[in-house]
Image 1 (tube, rainbow, N blue to C red):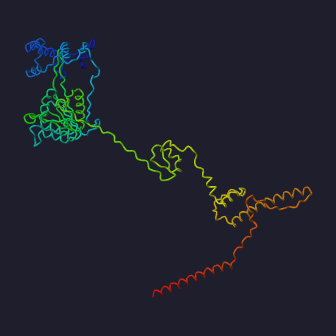
Image 2: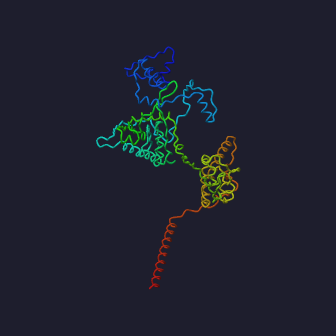
Image 3: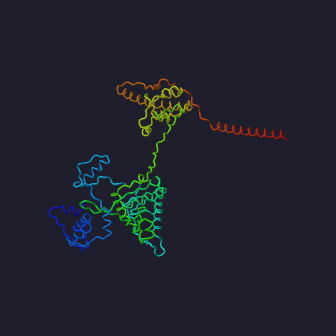
Length: 498
């Protein structure tokens, strides 16, 4: 309900009468009563009612003719039942026409489903360009301005028009929707719909032309009466292009309006377009659908859905090494066995199925492959110190010669002797106190089992200076002899060649 009607229903609320001399004057109950009398009883009763209420005659002859022709009376319950029976539907006895005041609409708001530019941002400084018919100052005519805007559109075209019958403009709209895939929204006055459909039939419209076009129908605000309604008409005329330009004025998209009538249009860009954007959304929400596919008896183009391609499974590659194993059911990835138990593979592949047994023990193989000298080195006691054993283990088998072993055991024997001397000194001191003297026997330290005593091996004396000089002389003589033999061979070869 209107806000004024809600105010009248409140208790003790008496609206103040606004005189006709003030600009706020809009509604008059005397005028509404006189209008009902006109539609029921005719012109004579209408003028009589105006005289009784001391009101002025506010309707022209043309307006009276339009109102009489456009009146839509409310249907009675009997007429509604007869229509429902004719259509094969059961009549609804519980009519809520006079008591049903919903807070929300019964129907969903139609969406702008084929695309609409995003709003809510600053559109820039408002710029204005005015065009008239006939053109002034050698400017373009109105139809040229409109067609140029349509042909340059790339995002959206939204039209609110009372009459759309110009063939060239219609062809430009269909080309933009079908060839350039520009969304086109059209809101027409209900009285101009038959003429719009007639001109589209002349262009032989097909289904591909209508795929990106949405057409809606809207009525005027109207005037409610006790037994009917005067619908009114749509007189707004504007076109939004790409969400950043708008064209509005008195120009209708028809041949007579572009050639015969005097009109004016204004092309504006910038922040002012936001107002027309909101107005178009409101008109689109309250409008009714006009199905062009149904009107032209054409089928909607089928939009096939793309199916998923079946990707062939990559065949498993044969193992190229005896150390490679397969990962689960995939069987495509091979990992060396020594890397199979690395924790980073658990992070990459998750819980990888591993072998049930333990890791292979290679200690037995090492023992079988070890040389006798390495076995002998493993039997050396650890009493000599861990550092000496480590150095001995790092030596290769070829380097364990008699000299190195002899040096090691000399050091080992000297350490044992020092320990024995200390023991003998302590024992001698104890015997002196008791008055008995015991001879100090330096016993040879016992060697570990399995190792021969190599201390008896005579040491090789170091080479003297004479021996070193003899070795140098012998090496120099050998080099001289080798040079002489080479020279003789080369002389023989030259003689043979000559």
